[in-house]
Image (cartoon, rainbow, N blue to C red; front, side):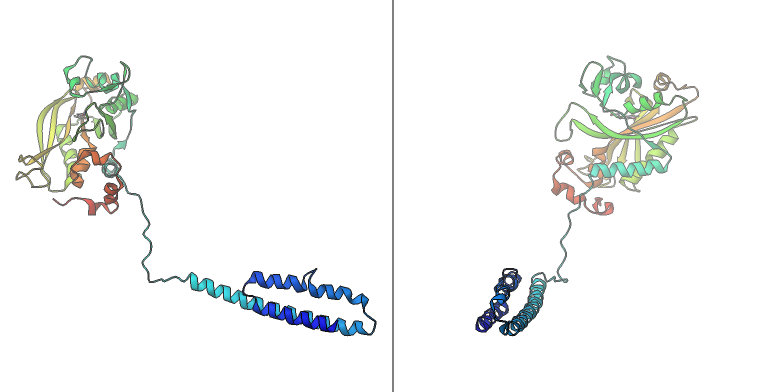
Length: 351
Ligand code: DAH
């Protein structure tokens, strides 16, 4: 029996010392020292021994067991260290390598324009309001001094949904809404950026586009107020050196009405391909709120006066960022949008 134990001891030692993984080491532990392990089975057979042999063999088995347990825990320690070293080696981080660039989203150029205008007008005491895109004929036209059959309706090819409902052709519809909703008929100062729809669709027009509307109503408002406000607006958007030119025009909801041109920001007014050699670029429509519009929406034109203006956001974005094709604003091409992944100032085109 002694011989058998010594053989076992030798075999177990070899197996323990040669185990190269934690799994193998554990297999060896179970094989020799586990409940049904070979050394455990020897212990169970102690009963068959003579009383003289029992203590001798007993102490031998205990010695061997202690020795194997020690060997196992040492080997375990070694293997754990090895494993850790391997892991450290494999997962070594070279902190001098450049990091991985995280892709950030970028604001759409039209949204940038909207945010900039909102900041500007809020700083002048305006509220930002919105209205429905599915609008009624009443608010889109009638309450703006454009009765049914009025020839000026032809200027805006509309998407009618029913005879009464249409997709709004202009954010001017919100003017009437704000006036009607203000039951106390107190002064108004609002801007309204939003989507508008018309039935044209070519390289320079889209069936859906963005507009921003401005409306101010108070006592003693004059054309000088309109001019001053638009000057701040245009200079902020297109550069402090911009000059403005007011050209008489016609809009049913304003009287007098003006189209406003800005000195070409590319050539400074000398004439170039952007301004078609005129030195000027048309930028917005404006005027003093027509007395009929005030009256129809509950404001007494004898007491109140006001001004309004409206312009295309896409055009502004195109000018500001030097974009030549309007469709780029709507096709969601990330290569285009990623160019706006930097600070505003860097994007602004230096003419
Ligand atoms: N609504 C006009 C358009 O879409 C633009 C406009 C002109 C708005 C004059 C105004 C205004 O508020 O006073 O063509």
